[in-house]
Amino acid sequence: MKSREYALANLENQDLINLAVAHNVHNERGFGPEGDSAYHNHIYKNAKKDAEIIDGAGNKKNLTEYLLEKSRKEGQLYSGQIYEKKLIEEASKSIETALNDVTVEDILRLIGSNKSVNEKYKGKTLAEFYPKRDENLTDEENKKRLGEMKLKDVQEIQKQTQFAESLKQAYFSYISKKRVSEALAKSAEIDVKGDLENLVCETEETH
Image 1 (cartoon, rainbow, N blue to C red):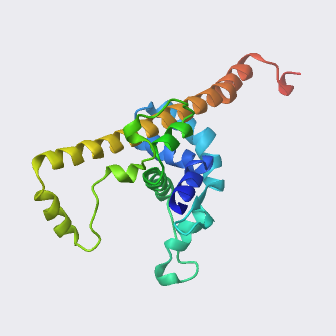
Image 2 (image 1 turned 90 degrees about the vertical axis):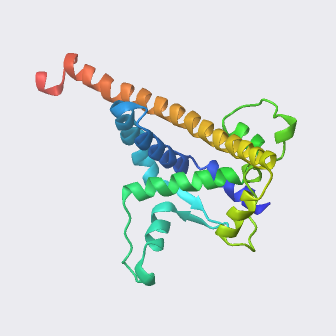
Image 3 (image 1 turned 30 degrees about the vertical axis):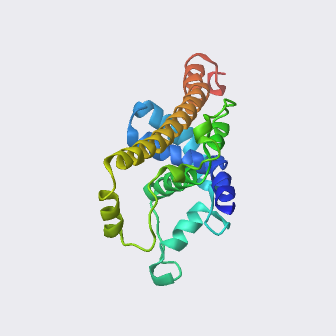
């Protein structure tokens, strides 16, 4: 299935992941100014230059160039513009979309887990846990169709949707904590250690 193949390519693209995490770290504010700063200086700066994205047709594109082209006014040359916020938003959106097209087993593998998946989740993509939309109906008609379902069916749909959302949240929480920890370690090694060395070590000026 091509969609799963393209989704996995995006989820295995470390620069794209790093930009998505930047969006999560900056907006959730759960890592404090120190974590936000360390991530920006030691991971985000490198990721924004090289991040690539695989589109729905399987084409690999540099994310910045892709967004610039996408933002052009009526296709006019040199009319495109993007902001850093848009860059990390698009990366986060791409990762979330990709998660819908991979299986539960894929997600476990991506976080380095070798645990066995519960039988009822095996081989299922996250998209399968969301309500099925009838493409022949309008949004309003689809909502009406859901409203006419029996209560137990609606509750089952809500339960399945909540499972998929919880899985996504857990995935983003894991990669965010992992990458911020790496950023803080780099900050300690490069910034804090450097400051300490500057305080106590001899420099060329002291000779």
